[in-house]
Image (cartoon, rainbow, N blue to C red; front, side):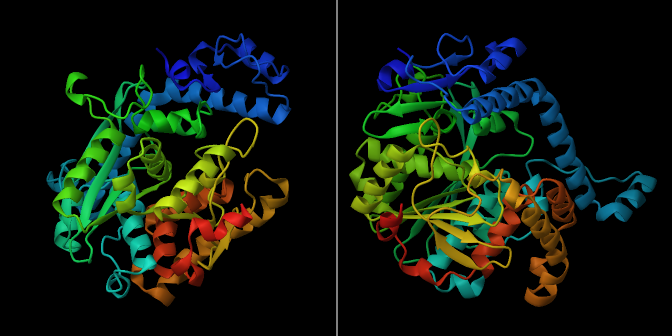
Amino acid sequence: MSCKELFGGTYLLLNPQEATLLDLLRLLFSSKLENRSFIECPVDIKAEEFRQRWLLFTSIVAQKLLFTSGNTMKMMGDNLELWLNTLSSNGGFLGLFKNKLKGKVITPDASSATFMSVAGFLDYRVDLVKSIQDKNDDAKYKALLSMMASKFSYENEEYIENAVTNRWHMKFWGLYSFWNDFQELWSTKAIILQDTKTKPNLIVVAFRGTQPFNSAQWITDVDLSWYELPNVGKIHSGFMKALGLQKNSGWPKEIDQTSKSNHLYAYYTIREELKAMLHANEDAKFIVTGHSLGGALAILFAAILTLHEEAWLLDKLEGVYTFGQPRVGDQAFGDFMKESMRKYDVKYRRYVYCNDLVPRIPYEDKTLFFKHFGPSLYFNSLYQGQVLEEEPNKNYFSVLWVIPKILNAVWELVRGFFLPLVKGKEYKDTWLMTLARFVGLIIPGVSAHLPPDYVNVTRLGSLREIQDLSVSETSKTD
């Protein structure tokens, strides 16, 4: 039995591989979505507005391009990472040149504690800020810890273990890889660590976000498909699949992972790991976090715990901290989650930096697509924060915002040169991040999504209201 039959609600499923050029052109001029080879949905689901059809069109085209370019993207990413690490291992351009002349070029080991991802080269910072860390019951510390853990989740296991145990002096439980039944890939990753110095101990689950050259993860991001779960709402299907949605059984409360070719699924594995850790340390609490796609998986993890009525775990859930998180569900899903957060007293902190593109997608549409819930902890390019119902320019593609976004991108480029003079050398943009800032002049919002600005937000950001903020306190404005 398929998921659409199991859930019993409405659904909209895109099958881009089945779409021809003629099919796509017809889509733009007809509101009827049923009886198309590349769209599955009930007959009463229609795209009445051209804007909705255009969004479906762009989603399908983007997925087709990503399907065909997947191997090329992986090769580019692997080569770029190898080149960056070779450069670093040999002491920079000059050192690499000298070592080549001597025939002694150092080849980096991709599994070593010194090998970094592209995300690592965008932001070299490893240590927490001691002045913030000393206030370990403070909301700012939890935000900093969450964002740094989210940044580490992009790295290899040896790198993370070395940083967490030797620099943070915390317990590292591991880097986990999870199976996606629909992509048939180990495409979801998460790390678990534990701050043993806090009272109570704090366990952190950080989901890895979208890697720049991982086509499978980008396909998850751009896919506008959704399922409607009864009494819950519409939820982005790609995010559910990444979290562990079962192909033939949906979201059963229990599964036997030993009988599925040793496949591990993110939601089920992490849930059981948390139960074991928390039973061994009953005073401990845990937080769930992630950057980009990782943020979507973090809030969805809490949603499925609620769906399965995991009250004991939800009582142990201190908060969900997301950074640059895309939209996950519709208005009904938001209402379901706000009630759950209130019931179990779970904090939901959704951080948005300035013109970051990702929190503004998928396009907000109450009838067909998605909508954020809860407050936006919005920070401008001076790292000044506000608690808003929705981030400014919520759908990004507004003509009125084109010039302000470009001017802000120019300022961000300039800021990278003098911020270290004011705040210290750890705030200097890496040369790779500076290149990304130049890309941001052409596509404002892309460089704003990268980890460095979110790390800066958690270190430098000012937001007095965050100490007492909860979803219930802001629900009246939603």
